Picture 1: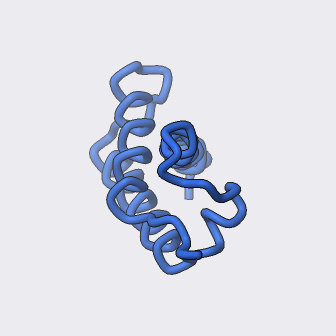
Picture 2 (picture 1 turned 120 degrees about the vertical axis):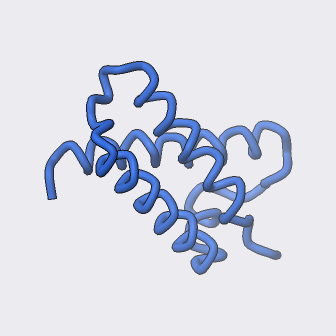
Length: 92
């Protein structure tokens, strides 16, 4: 795999972290980031696989230049949205 894929994935995962931070700020999630990612591990895996698939789709379409604002924002918002759909806070 190309190093651009991993850079794109890192930006997408930043969107995942932004979703957690937003939910934490709005008190929808009261656990730490460690508990959020490991407490309901199946949901976290689903979010990560969906993020990888999204990045792969962008890369295959030729949109690999993250210095382009449209690509950067697509990756960031994609990670945020995918985590919002797939990941759930652990039940206590």
